[in-house]
Amino acid sequence: MSFDDYYFMDLAIEEAQKSTDNGGIPIGSILVMNNEVISKGHNKMIQKNSPILHGELDAINNAGLLKNSQYKNITLYTTLSPCPMCSGAIIMYNIPRVVIGENETLKGSENLLIKNNIELINLNLEKIKNLFNEFKENSDLWDEELKRVGNSTELKI
Image (cartoon, rainbow, N blue to C red):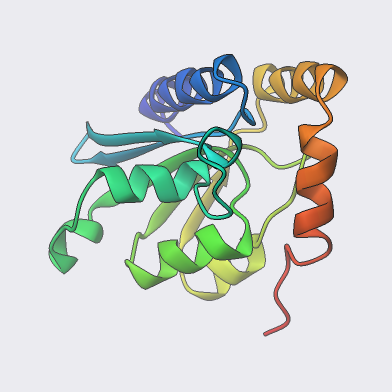
């Protein structure tokens, strides 16, 4: 972990807040290459009525199609542990490093990332846990999302 990890996670939190401010789930993501933000994204499932617009996928999509060599220099910052779908995209695009804000709200497919040699760092930040707790107290969207995700967060590989 470095100072930069906390700095870039704060930007991911700003993205998560954008989602919440627009009626969505507070998940934000940032793609960083060579210590520069190349893309931002946040969960837009509710806002766009989309089953796939998770924060991580939004950030990957907003970066556009990069060269394979560029993906190998990216760190993905996300406020919440990536689900199987987002983990699959991380693996598919050979993103070598993922920094998670916290994984107590939901533990995603972290073992899948680790098995694919992706460096995984959990900052375990209270401010993100608090953001989710506040969101859960004021919305039934999270309960509905958990029903969709079910027990699929850890793939059986």
